[in-house]
Image (cartoon, rainbow, N blue to C red; front, side, top):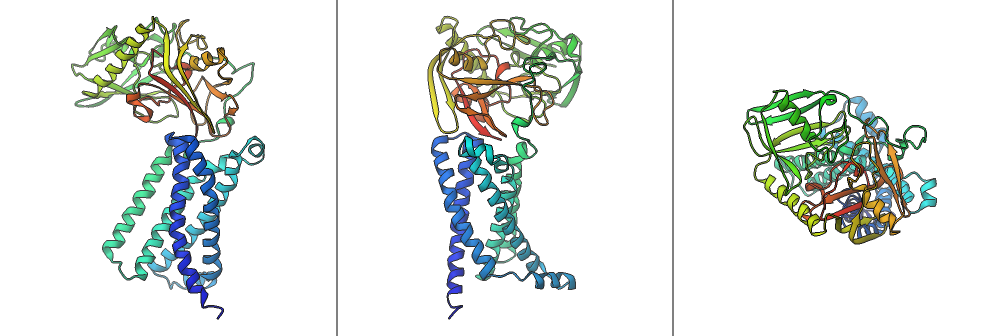
Amino acid sequence: MTTNWIPKLIRVDRIISWILVLITLLTMGSGYGITRINLNQPALLVIHTNVKWIFIILITFHFIVTVFFLRYRWKIILSKVLNGKTNLAFWLKLVQRLSGWSLLLTALIIFLSGLGWVGNILRGIIPFYPHIRYDLLFAISLIIHVFLGIKFALNRKKIIGRGVNMVVLIASVSLLLLTAFFEFPSIFSRPINDVGTDDPETHNSPLNTIPTRTGKVNVLFSSGGQDFSFDPNVIESSRPDIFNSGYFSIFDILVQLGKEGKIEFEYHFDQSMNTHVIDTINGEIDWWYGGFYDGGWWESNVFRPDHYPWKDDMTLTFFHKNAEVDEVYTVFREEVDRKKENNGKVIIPIVTIIGISNRMNFYDVEVTPHNLRNDVFQEGVITAIDVILSLGDIGDIEYEFRWYESIDSADIVKSYWVEAINDDKSFERCGFVYESGSNKFEGFIGNHIHLPSDTRVLNSPEYIKWFWICI
């Protein structure tokens, strides 16, 4: 009588397990949607902060059933290991059990640290950092646990064979690799507020920002890639209307290499796009570039190369992009035309700020120069950070900036970051990032690049958006 209900409980637990998988995916998906993909944050925040309670209830039930009613006899397991009486099925079951414990522990850490998101009071007591530090371990544990569970379920139904085993193996390994790749940029990151300084004697303003180290640029010719070194101390800017003496753009590197005879470089200035256009490098056409600063990673971008400041330890490659360049040039022309229509003023049709729990839209925002980075740029040059300053000037928002010499593995940052907008202030690995440009290249297909907002020169973009993210 005491055991008749146990098989029924186990059957219920198996159903609960599949529901738990779906709830977990929903919880993780909404979390990543908020922090990584920048989807509709208020709606996803409601899902993420409420579904977690269902997750806690279900995982508690699953834990109780598997630990107290499907007892795993560790003494017997240890004895088999010591006596060499093991097989593949034995080890797979052991791995599944260990992955289950890993799931439980990481889920507990993520849940408790997630309470630090709730408000300023809890945030000061409970560190939020582990919430976005242990998600990779949780995801890997989940994949291993679920796919081994699928294998054993198929075994019980006697419908598994070598082919099905292979499918399960390939699917699980693929998900593991995809998860690791998705998480890679933030695996080794430390909290944002562990770096930088507010020391008024040293780093609260630009200091020694002129590039001085020997640089390298890679050019991918049709015949193969070739690296070229250059001395930043001898490069002059082709845009003295933008850059101060000592500073230059990534485009200017090609100009210097051409002067030195290292490449055959032909180019012209196109007034309708307000940018220099690469005609040919060693006789080859259709060039674009990819670049990122110290500590960054490869990303698509739509930004004028003669506006992009070179910085020490930057990674830079020029490559062929064929017809896609025409779409980029169309956007540049639209920006110049928009500025002409506004009589030379930079008026952005829509500025969006998405904080932790609210979204603000500002329309037809006129941006004025504040010369925050007059070390790099000429007086009167407008950068993306001027949008925040301009909104602050008219009282639409309150803000805080902070100067960073370095961030985590990025030793050379030397830029201001938007530290707070209204009541939302950066903490640990959470804070505001931005993107700007045309709606055609919204997000990570071109507009969201890791060029600090205080060094991103604006022409007249179709939109600019600041949004809250945890990395």
